[in-house]
Amino acid sequence: MKNTLIVLLIILSFSCQQPDETGWIPQSWIAERVADSETRMQQSAAGSRLLDAINAHGGMEKWFANGALWFHFDYQPLDDKTRRNSYQLVDQWSARSVHELATNREVRYGWDGRDAWVFPDTAELPVNPRFWSMTPFYFVGLPFVLADEGTQYEQLEPQQLNGRNYDLVKVTYTSGTGDAPDDFYIIYIDQQTSKMGALRYIVTYPGFFPNGGHSPEKIMILKGLQEVDGIWLATGYDTHWWKDGVGEHITTIDVKDVQFKPSVDREEAFAKPAGARLHEGL
Image (tube, rainbow, N blue to C red; front, side, top):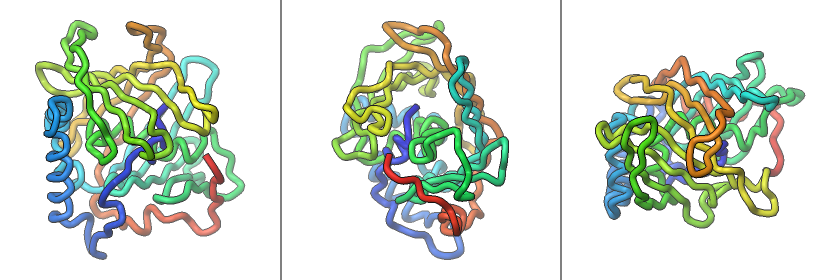
């Protein structure tokens, strides 16, 4: 799945800024970032339609003002591949994360904005921490994460899926954006509600495809939506192969225990723990 890909994928123009020592993010910073994203997205019909979806899901201002995002992400392949099950805290302002394994909450890993790390240093993980540290957030945070710098938008022909009509917006990335700038997403926006109903995507992460190429295209269909402090997020996804239509069901994902945590000390919460092992390379 998209990775860190996007972890990294998220190139944030304000990531170098820090709030004062007593709070989350100053409202003036949020207003500036939202205005910048809206101006950029409104330059095209495709970007404007995706902005409609973001507003239908609660809007960027509330998304950033609510505080750090906590959730339980349980990725369950329907074949013999590895289950990925963790509790996660994410700083959506600067794209940093900390995971706790659901099977052993003492084992943690994350991305601090520069390095992927594992704690304790002897821990074995079921995932590549650089790839997976931000990947779940990228799916949980849709459509908000598609407003970041480096994104490009293209309107595709509308499609029907499961009896509903959707506008389609394809999202690609400018060269040099994150670890996998050749990834793409196709977002399904309900013509009646403007909320997201599905997405298609490929993975081009060079750690998995060092000689180029990409994964087969997949479609993730939302199981439902949950409202958390004014923000609408997916309750989970059913993932299928895609080839001119919905194919075999290959993965189910549950997203539970979603909370915003505005009182989190961002610098302490997302710092590498003392004694953590750094993950080298992709």
